[in-house]
Each structure stands twice: as structure tokens, then as C-alpha cells.
Image (cartoon, rainbow, N blue to C red; front, side):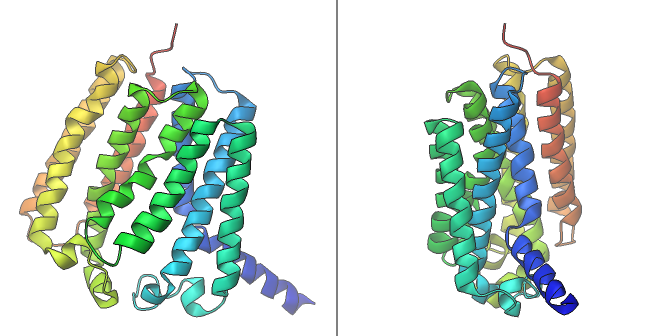
Length: 294
């Protein structure tokens, strides 16, 4: 009896691992920020609950299917070889059914309790991650990182549309900030694990174009984030506190990227971790310094 209970516990843990909880957590945080901004600084508890539930389930389901499709390359990479599917602790069929069910529940929740546009954007996020990124592009071109950024940039937009009921320039601003933030965030990590990606045959930018090009493109994207980060203030979405914080942290990010560019070290884990702090600070101060409607 005890042994069977332990088996079920391990199995549940493996299925949870398939959902990539860390990524889902980031999705939920940015979605919540989008809801708050879209609602003009007030949260409807029921709408918030259902939007977060639907978005979280879609992100989790997409992550599971991504792991099913990538189980062969995951087994070749040191960083991912211990995942449940490469280890054989979860069957591909069971995992695919689990992921598909999560996405289906997400669709039903968004249709019944949120709104059609938010539902469409949620399904678009899943489609872009599973089909565009995982199936069509990841094994073929380094551009997959940039195109794959669509899925990661949509959660705050989904939240905004849920709260505001429409897609406008504020929603577009949230999307562009997240979209431009993701490639340099990923490339810093890809540099560290480029031999893993090379072994698995995944043509990430460091593998296909080399370290120098990766650093240059990282700088270009980081440069673009400076003016983009100030757009919320320019369109009257946030106040002066946000402007000062966004200006300061964007300049720090840019300075660290310049240092990264000219450093002889090929790894950029400090830049990777700072990029997480960067996006967290931006969204936090968007909320703190939100200019309330009316």
C-alpha cells in the first residue's frame, strides 16, 4: 500500500514537471499584470480567477505537448535528459492526452467565463508555441526563438483584453515589450548550453551563427527595449515614477549587455538572471504607477 502510494506520488510529480511550473508562474504573473492594467486598476475577483485559470491551463498544456514532441532531443541534452519522458517514467500517449485535456479545459473556461477575443489570443499562444515554434521552426532555423516569442508575449495581452474588453495601443505596448525582451533573455541561456543544443541538432543562434553574432543581436534587442520601455509613460498609461524606474533599469540592462558584448566570457548567466529582474521590475512599476482611468 505504501509502495503504491509512493508510485502515485512520483507519477503526479512527473506530470507536474511536464507542465513547466516555472514558465507557467511567469505566464500567470504577466497575465495578472495585464488584467490589472486593462481594468484600469481594479480587479474583478471572478474574472481574474477564470482568466488566470484559462491562461495557466493553456500554458501548462502547451508545455506538456512541447515535451512530448521534443522527447527525442531532450534525451540528447544533458540539461533535459532527466525529464520524465526521456526517463520513460511517463508514456508519450499519456502525456499527450494530459496536455490536450488541459488546453481543452482552457478553451472552455475562456469561452464561458472571459470573452471571445481573450479566448482567441489564448489559443493563438498555444498554437504559436506548439505548432509554429516546436513543430515547424525549432529544428530548422534560429529564427524560431524570435517567432516563438509570440506565445510568451501574449499572456499580458490576454490579461489586458480580459480586463478591458478590447485590444488597443496599451495592449500592443505590453506585447511589444514582452516580445522584444524574450530573444536576448533566451540567447544568454543558449550560449551556456550551446554544446547541448549542438549535440541535439537544434540550430539556436549560438550554434548556427556563433557567439559573436549572438552577442550583437542580444545588444540590438536590448537597445530596442529602452525606448519601448518608455512607451507606457508616453501614452499616458503610467506616471513619472515608472518613467524614472524604467529609464534607470533599461540603462543598467543596456550597460550590462555592452559589457557582455566585449567580455571574453561566452556565458551570460548574469545577464540572463538580470533580464528576469528587469521584466519583473517593469511590470511591477507599471502596476504601482498606473494612471487610473477617470
